[in-house]
Length: 115
Length: 110
Image (tube, rainbow over all chains, first blue to last red):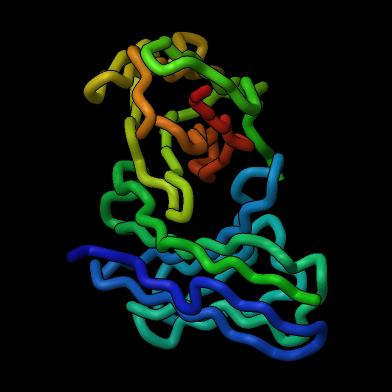
């Protein structure tokens, strides 16, 4: 089954403790992206990647890092989490070849709480 | 970053009612997309629109790409309980950057 898998689904951590949220897709998609969802603000893009070893900042990249060493994986790293990074995070992927005609496929989300 | 103006923010409706929501932009868009997010899940694409004036249906859902290329609407006819969730509009702007609306939360009154 074609899917985007994020782990963990829920995470509670303390300020300053480094964490990684994993994302993996099995559709051979070139494009992958991370979003955060906050009430009233919708989806805001954190980082995106157009292919292996190619990453770029989205609208809200501060406090986050990403890497794209393999096509299928796109982990989101919070080196020193702060309470304002408490949010619902989504990973998404799509085919670059189909460009605007390729829909984004989203994972089921990771709810992060930083205390 | 830029965000689309999506209205309403939330809707309380009775089962069986028709629903209408819209999205507007100050600049022209090349595509309009409508996604739905069920509780506890990620958004899923419902309808994609690629030409000004295009009207597309998906079951009880109908969406249109506005003639001015600056707006789009989504209608849901005869709502049922599984229609609850958050509906997002999105679109590719003139630079083909994907821009999102803040979402419309649909709640069905018991």
